Length: 150
Image (cartoon, rainbow, N blue to C red; front, side, top):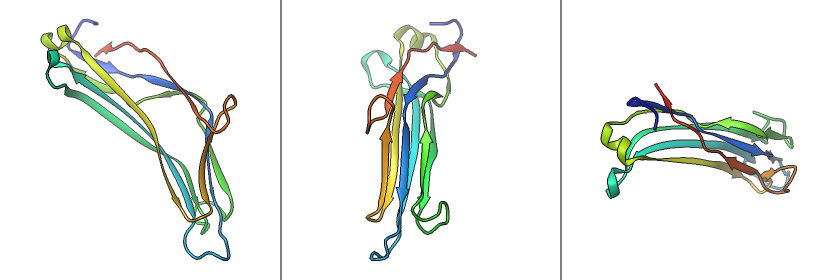
């Protein structure tokens, strides 16, 4: 554990792949057709309290819109699609937090969350994930990181 009582946690992940979304109108169907997808990331730092319930001492989250396709042509012309390339390193939301002597001696736990939320409306809307190595899958790799004193 580094010296000090204020720390900065800035983990990162590695993606291999992309997300694709599309929607198209069908003259036999009434109603909207759309495809939307968000990448949601979150980091929470917990004081473990020596076996008692963990207490959140820092938290941060981000929600990034990756795909926004609307068959009405407001965002993308009808029948078109969008692809979001995710391959590479992505920083997770950083968290700055404070630890007293007791918390430092017992330790902390850091939970990172990475998920996708998507909305599909209509019979002709879809979201798909793919990578060069694995069709119909997006690969995710996590790494160990060090706390930085502030």
